[in-house]
Amino acid sequence: MERRVERPPLAKRLKRFLRYLLIRTVLLCLQPLPLGWARALGSRLGGWAYAIAGGERRKALKSLATAFPEKSDAQRQELARASFRHLGAAALEVACTGALDRGLESLVAWPEADRAVLDAALAKGKGVVFISGHVGNWELLARRVARAGYPSQSIAKETTDPRLTKLVERFRERGGVRSIWRGQDGAARAMLRALRAGEILGLLIDQDTKVQSLFVPFFGQLAATPRAAADLAVRTGAAVVTGFCHRVEGGGYRLVMEDVPLPEGEDREAAALVLTAALSARIEAAIRRTPEQWVWMHQRWKTRPPVEATPQALLSGAAPATAR
Image (tube, rainbow, N blue to C red; front, side, top):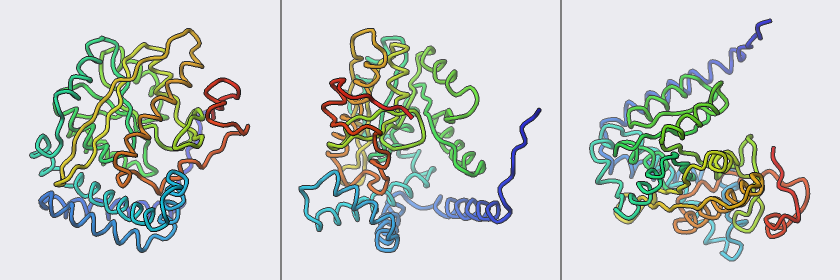
């Protein structure tokens, strides 16, 4: 029997349509703006959001208290405010696709040493599991690599509105980035095909989401961390690279890349845990470099392990890593 798909209530469908219409209108209005203007406007809007969105502000401050207990309340408040401003600026920069693509190479510096890391990983011939987080501007990271001619696909989560999902997909496709939508039929096979074809497969693993996860240390606390990246690398032998796109002084960005060795041994579960912990540590280090450029309003430590354990005990094998 064919499964019946229930449509959302009329009120919810209307709300989604109006949201989609608003986003499309805003994007059309932003198109003619120079990047500098868009960046300044986004920063101003982010500052207003910090002042107005009390719930998100409190989440950010709670996360910062967990990550930086040594900082004063005033320091954490300034970091949270700067994070809101950065995210606003980054969002509006990305919206100016015309100006963005015309000046992408000058906007996003990619030093030869960091490019060599990716070239060496691709030269191994087994594809690259490319790991990043919501640091700096992750959309520009994928776009810069893809428009430089590197075959790239990224794993993404669909929005609740198919129209918005299509909008995101078209934006990424114009930049040469193809999307594999997590949860869709055939997504797992598509990931394996990409690696077997020697392509770059990008994943963001710095958020607590409803996917299979392992508990590994993150700012001194155990955090549920998506395990798919480690599982793919361990299973296929693909090279693993971490990369981030940090905003630098003057308004531009710089790509930073680093290879991550695969754990040795035949125990895939243990290897996945060790690799996930190593990747989480690289993401933490990237956030510490530019803490104002991370999404602190995300509830990173929301899911707790069912068995209380210290990060040290978990990684030594004294306590189980729990998958969801």
